[in-house]
Image 1 (spheres, rainbow, N blue to C red):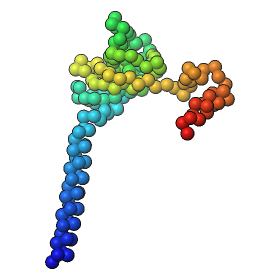
Image 2: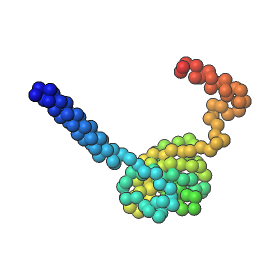
Image 3: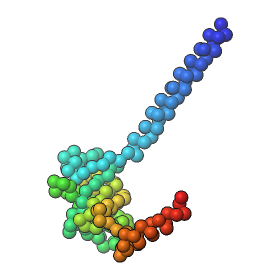
Image 4: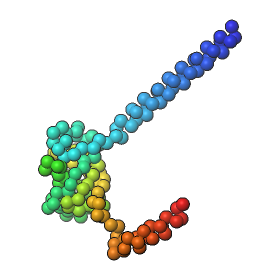
Length: 156
């Protein structure tokens, strides 16, 4: 009878552990549901806009001629375009990254406002395949490789 009881106790412990594990997973999923930000292209926002105030990421190209700095010197307005020339107006208050220029790629993190303007909290500028860090400009490939090797020696 005591062998049966020990087996029964193990079964109950395993079931309790499984219930706790599933509960922890559900709790984590519930806590993270508002932290997920979906990625949208301008044409997706036009065709199927997200809910107003939902955290999303908007990706596309900064339209040439659309970048305007407001009188406060901190707020900028610009337009993000998609592949099919869809346009989404964007407002950002803050310091833009160095690589953020007209005609370049951008990923803006933020929310769609009620008037249809995307209000960005953060800008991530994308560079093309020809990007060269300022520190390496004017160097030959060999000089750049040597400099990269010298800076990584202490990291190994």
